[in-house]
Image (cartoon, rainbow, N blue to C red):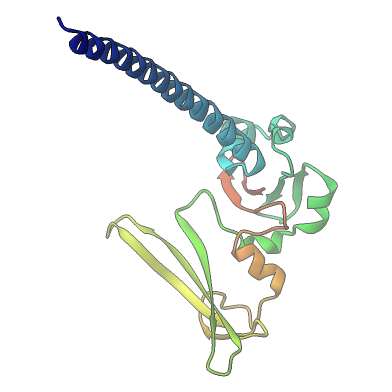
Length: 209
């Protein structure tokens, strides 16, 4: 082996060793990144569930509802959350988890709140009219199992003053207000969304959070 060939072999071995080291470091980095992302996403998912809980996270134990053990519903696990229970027959309040929701949610509001226990929901769209004033199109939509497709069951149109100018979605109302429009969009306040859950035991109740 001549001097040039020996030098090339040494350089090749160093390059091979360095490449192997870089590959090993890259592999370690990739594995560490995957583990970090998995842990972070798990923590982030849990954080988001606590910040914006799905109603099912609160009422998944339906036996608690059926037995009227409302104090056992783990609402304290979810920051900025509360619930209230109404009797459908006499429209009275059976339970409220705090005073604020007791003072701010009424039985009459339930008409405008999406029901978690059904496949129907309200959809609110805002468009600008020819005279540059807003119109609000409210539709009740859902999944039609017979036709296997999304369907619009009813709708109405509101002018800029929230007066109903078209449609039969709320036949007993001539107008809505901003608060009711927020409920239709699932908004209670800046920190809380709102849904209701209907269930039955001895009577029929509505529960919302």
